[in-house]
Image (cartoon, protein in one colour):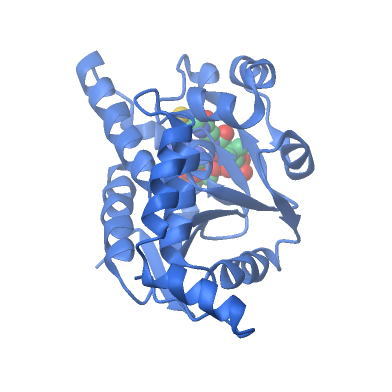
Length: 258
Ligand code: COA
């Protein structure tokens, strides 16, 4: 079904692994198309409540867009390529199910952009983040200039963008680019541990949190109004009734996502 992705499903968590380890999991056209399709498929799969994106092998999460596909592209083709990448990464950012990046090595260029489009990030101690596009006479095209500023602030973001410097996992954590650093061995189990907690919460409320938080950076929306709307919508859900009843009856809530 997929030639460059592996998908494992366990305990309502899907682990999506980008599987081109001999090319540092670089994002070629096939990977992007499959990622596009896989996110739709997992969002439609009622057995799945949350998603992990990671890379195959011990060295790389994703070392960027596939540079070999840049050769010979004209300006119009380059614009189409960036628009397509941005659309897919926005789909990840707007996913109603939480998507977490488990960054297991190099997250460079499009790899850093992919990690930043996820809702949050864990990293192994050997992870390295960077936007090295200026080394190629380029800039990020899959949302990197925007999301890096959003996540770590403009001054540090511009420094990283124009020096092409990489930052290691602990610096990435101190910058707010990653939430937690683990050993390489524990990266997936720690990520799953967090998601198994998230999976016990009300899915529609989780989706509303994501929507309201994303509205901060959407100039077509007023985030506070969005929050009021989502707050109101929660009151129409069976999960909200269940959550409130469970609290009052001193029992654990069983959320159905309805
Ligand atoms: N696109 C295409 N191929 C890539 C790639 C990319 N972004 N990143 C790595 N590869 C390929 C290499 O060409 C090499 O292929 P080969 O074995 O057929 O020659 C293979 O992956 C292994 O990479 P290599 O460079 O030999 O590994 P390394 O451990 O010496 O270095 C990196 C690792 C990640 C530092 C280095 O590969 C790199 O700088 N990659 C490009 C990063 C980048 O500029 N990304 C932004 C793109 S816009």
